[in-house]
Picture (cartoon, helix red, strand yellow):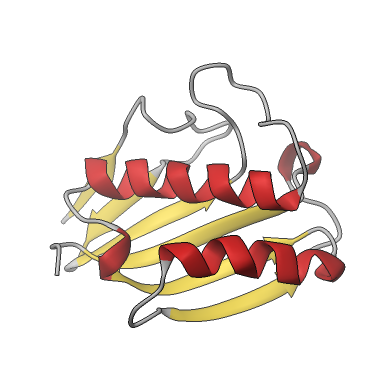
Length: 128
């Protein structure tokens, strides 16, 4: 059984996908880009500010699914430019201080709406 997760506290899907799916004891959150859910526009600033918004969006989606960032077991970070790794990593690290999840980070030729960063997560469905 799978359950669609949807919240107005994070940007609505901009295509034929769900913000997240809850299934098999996990939550699979779609990649979030740095859209402000209130305006639908990118937050101003560089990759650090974009990463901050992405993490807030992911937190909102996970909360709507009944879990949170502490229950994340795997992330995938997509960067438009690997030279932004340090700035992204500094912000990312503030959200995963203890027992950080497994992670892959890749440079993508292009991200939706020309974002600098996109992050997707897999979390345990129940809060730890």
